[in-house]
Length: 316
Ligand SMILES: *[C@@H]1O[C@H](CO)[C@@H](O)[C@H](O)[C@H]1NC(C)=O
Ligand SMILES: *[C@@H]1O[C@H](CO)[C@@H](O)[C@H](O)[C@H]1NC(C)=O
Ligand SMILES: *[C@@H]1O[C@H](CO)[C@@H](O)[C@H](O)[C@H]1NC(C)=O
Ligand SMILES: *[C@@H]1O[C@H](CO)[C@@H](O)[C@H](O)[C@H]1NC(C)=O
Ligand SMILES: *[C@@H]1O[C@H](CO)[C@@H](O)[C@H](O)[C@H]1NC(C)=O
Ligand SMILES: *[C@@H]1O[C@H](CO)[C@@H](O)[C@H](O)[C@H]1NC(C)=O
Ligand SMILES: *[C@@H]1O[C@H](CO)[C@@H](O)[C@H](O)[C@H]1NC(C)=O
Ligand SMILES: *[C@@H]1O[C@H](CO)[C@@H](O)[C@H](O)[C@H]1NC(C)=O
Image (cartoon, rainbow, N blue to C red; front, side, top):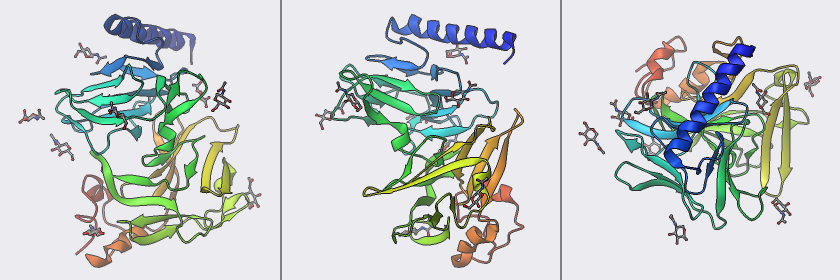
C-alpha cells in the first residue's frame, strides 16, 4: 500500500470506529471487536486488524439480509461465510448483538431472534481475525475460544482453517441465495482417506483420491503453491492448507453452486482467477443430469448461474 492509501485506510478505520462509538458509547472497543452489549445494524461493519476481512450485513438481492464475512479490500464482494444462511432477515437488515449474557444473537427488525450462538460457556467479546475467522472469546480466560466460524464452514475452506470430521461444505442454492444447495463436500464415509462430493446427500460423483503423504492422489500438482496438511485422528480426517510463502495472494477452496471444487486466487489486484478446478469435465457433474436428460458440456454456464440446480443446464 502506498502512504496515501495507508493514510486513507487509517482514516477510514478511525471514522468507522468513531461512528461505532457514537452509536454505542464505549461498547465497541476496536474496529475488529464486538464487546458485551454491542451490536451491528444496517451498514455498520467490523474489520479484521489488518483490514483483510469485513463482517456485517449483506443482501444478495435487496430483500433477504444476512450476516456475512467478505474480503474488505477487493472490489468484487466475495462472501466467505454466512451466519444465517437459512434464516434471512426480510426487507431490512436487522441487528447482530453480543448480548450481556455472552450469546451472539441476530434479531430481525421485528425483534425476533432469527439466528443465535448460545453455548454453555459465555463470551466476553467477539472478534474478526485476519484469517477470516470470527471468534467468540470467553471472559475468564482471554485465550479461550467459545465458538468460531471456522468450525461452522459454509462453502469454502480458507487458509488456516481446519476442515473435516463430521463437517460439510454445502454449496449455495444459487448466486442470489446462500441457502443450502444440492452439493456437499465431506470426508469419505467409507473410511477411505479422501474427501468426496455428493449430490443431494446421495450420489457421490467426485473424489479427491486418497491422501499420499503430501498430496491427494487424484490432484497432483496442487502442492506446487499450497502446503497441505491432512491429519487423521480418532475424531476423523482433517484437511488444512496455507499458501507457500512466495505467494502473497488471497485464496480459497470453494464448492461451487455447480458442484465443482475450485481453488480461486485473487492475483492481479482486480479479479478472482480460478487456479484449479475439478471435475475437469463439466459432464462429470452435469452427468447427474441422467435423471433429467443428457449432458452437454458446451451448454452456456450462464444458464446455470442464477438457477436452482436441476432446473436448467441439463439438456432435456
Ligand atoms: C450507512 O447508512 C446510513 C443510514 O442509512 C447512510 O446515511 C450512510 O450514507 C450509509 N453509509 C455508507 C458508507 O453506505
Ligand atoms: C417486505 O416488503 C414487502 C413489499 O414492500 C411487503 O409486502 C412484505 O410484507 C415485507 N415483509 C416483511 C417481513 O416485512
Ligand atoms: C440459551 O440456552 C439456555 C439453555 O438451553 C436457555 O435457558 C437460554 O434461554 C438460551 N438463551 C438464549 C438467548 O437463547
Ligand atoms: C493480514 O494478515 C493475514 C494473516 O496474518 C496475512 O496472511 C495477510 O498477508 C495480511 N494482509 C495484509 C494486507 O497485511
Ligand atoms: C486458558 O485457555 C487455554 C486454551 O483453552 C488453556 O490452554 C489454558 O490452560 C487456560 N488457562 C486457564 C488459566 O484456565
Ligand atoms: C431474494 O431471494 C430470496 C431467496 O431466493 C427470494 O425468496 C426473494 O423473493 C428474492 N427477492 C427478490 C426481490 O428477488
Ligand atoms: C433429493 O433427495 C430427496 C430424498 O432424499 C428427494 O425427495 C428429492 O426429490 C431429491 N431432489 C432432487 C432435486 O432430485
Ligand atoms: C508434490 O508432491 C509430489 C508427490 O509427493 C512430489 O513428488 C513433488 O515433489 C511435490 N512437489 C512440491 C513442489 O513439493
